[in-house]
Image 1 (tube, rainbow over the protein chains, first blue to last red):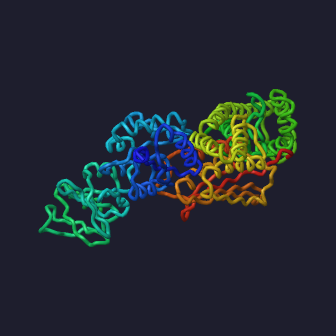
Image 2: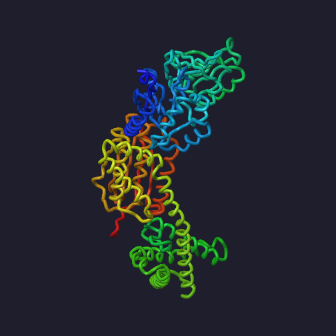
Image 3: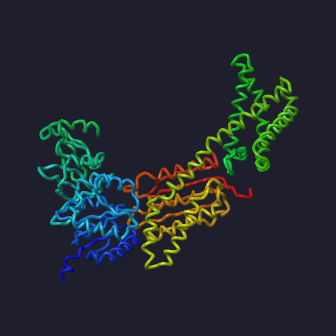
Length: 252
Length: 336
């Protein structure tokens, strides 16, 4: 029973069925020297996050190239969890990612994976601290397609395309979609850098999605610049600061 | 193969039946005639009537020459480069003499027969020199294309994922694993081969099928394939390794980025005497793999131009969530 409880719970995430089968075979071989249980399989990053929300997972074998949400983005969402599972990246060939991983000291396995390498990686995953969010951010070459909200140990995804605006308040950033609001632990400056082009800064504490701008209104009382942005879908009016007044001209 | 040598590194006369070659010859010859007219005229204003006079004689010579050279090009290629140039030179003199005799009564011809012969030989020499230099300039591009075949056509991504898929099958389905390795061997045999000569499209289709068999192993029912090639003449000659990279692109950009996959449709057939190949795949837009795509397409476009000059075209378009590549090229067979 003692052995059972110590068994590491592993999730396999890969979009190719044979690749998942291969990992299963290899993990079976590791079982003797490394007690483990295969929790589930996922075909993309989204499914992987769903499994992690549902089950206790200790280690994720995460393929980098996957549809919808790729391995790197999934890892960035996972890394925001209070007690994230360890991540072992797998890839067949991805020149950019491999270079970025080397630079940021992130471990990865090259497919086809050898059982010895897998065993070493599993051992390391147990001992070493998890990959940091900063390292993953540095390694990623493209912006995320979702922001993740962490509530009670679970990951909620908010599609970046659905965000109307982002507003900084004290420690958090409020994410506003047409339906509701979320709080995320991110910095507004970082978000502005990551999604440059999609959002435009209208105030020291506010980024508005270009797509969400319905128009501008004269609003002398509440805004320093005398202008306010009208948000599509909700009709909210957000003040434009004096420094960002140029934005109004850019859109009009 | 158009203006490109087929054996070794030797240069040979261009294919005078090719529209591009004809146009180039037309431009070169007329430019030289214009130069001659300007030199001969006393003032620049008089150069125009002078040019008309040259052209009246030059154009029939050029057209007759191109028609005959097109007809006898196989014979010319057979006798070797230098003898064929000598033959063309003598032939041009003969044509010029015949045309001058035929038009002598109508046109106010000036200058002696020797002067005319000199001009004819000079223009012929310059034109052949132009084609010689052009094919020399393009020859390294073909060697380059071959190297790129190894580096770019088959993505390393595909190679390692395929090996991984075969490894996965080894224990559970050894027969399928064997089959996949055989397909991979065939694929790489073609990739490593000398791919400078044109190949029948039938072979290209077989190669693409083998490639797709390996991809199906990896992607399972995410990859759906539709072939519409009933009207395709299997003996039509195409640049080798043209279809497989296009299909690979379609899988990489159109099928892999979707969890549920997509359909790759390949159509080929004759239309208005031309060979037309159409490839379609879903276009996911957001989340598509960056770069890579353009390189493979540019490579194919370049090779089409090398082989067929202006007679081939390739265009790609995105419409209604579908990515579509259309290639048109002359219908050539080994016998023609």
